[in-house]
Image (tube, rainbow, N blue to C red; front, side, top):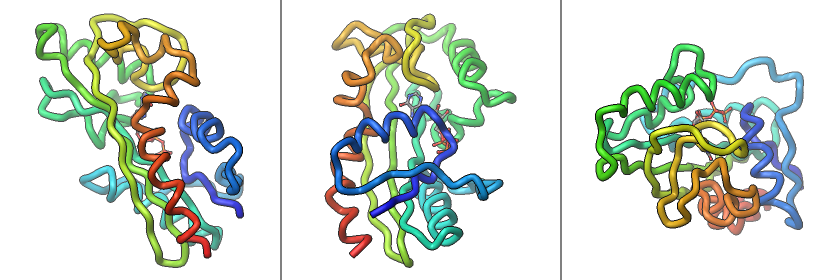
Length: 194
Ligand code: ITT
């Protein structure tokens, strides 16, 4: 059974392809004929995941799985949160990271705690399944590492003494917010399809 991954983020897509290896489902990218995704007007990750999954599923009349995720920084009262992808004016990964580091220059090491959150929502014929995952860490003081995407170069995992972008992709996929959510939702997907 094919499920469309309702994302335009290549970094997420690559992680899903690896996470779903050996499964009964085939996850496919959004077919080329869909020109635009709807605006993410939700106030929560879950609302935005529903907007994306429903739109793609109804457009193609197929099951779809959406990922809405982001970074919550305690010193910034949980921001950028649902605005993580649109934090800087360009919205590029580099500019988003630079803006975040600029806002954190006066924040001490002890107060730099943050977490990635991932909400996954599957949609088919009006039915939904949902799961979420979290990865705790800190906002680093500088960029490190070339792997991953988004905020990975400035996200420090104190337990490993590594930035997320320094980790091998297999290692990130063992501990990430996305893999935790995926681990839960993968067992719910059959109920959506049958
Ligand atoms: P889609 O909506 O098309 O899926 P998007 O990139 O716009 O793609 P979101 O609205 O969910 O996705 O925004 C997620 C933001 O959080 C975006 O800036 C990502 O770079 C960042 N993010 C999510 N997961 C991440 C991860 O594992 N590592 C680093 N940054 C991540």
